[in-house]
Amino acid sequence: MDVLYALRARARQIVGPVLGFTLCAYFAYHLVEGDRGLLALWNLQTQVRDAQATLSQLQAERDPLAKRVSLLQGDHIDRDFLDQQIRAMLNYAAPGELVIYYPHAH
Image 1 (tube, rainbow, N blue to C red):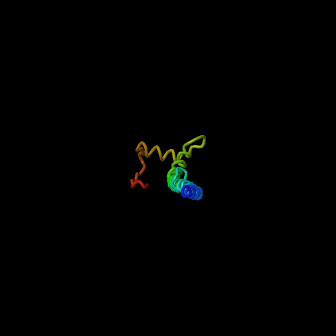
Image 2: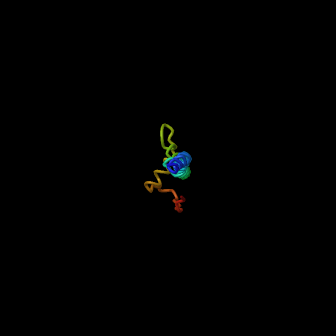
Image 3: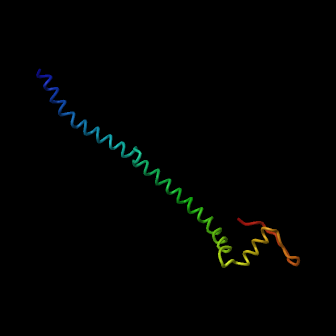
């Protein structure tokens, strides 16, 4: 009976720290590996950085196009640009004009 009592006393002393360690390990694991853990945060930051780089590139491509469109919008149409676009789209040239072809720069 004394052996059983000693085992129960030891078990009571061990259960608390083991349970505490187990809880700490559980939360530490989910802090790193969980859905909202550190690894998920780092992956999201990488995705945000990539998306911002893509956005910057697309804005750089969009700005010249937006400027060209603004020349043809509203009450202040740029007549020279409109004439240039008409000639380019319709392959139009006046009878006395000299047309020089050059490769289209991107």
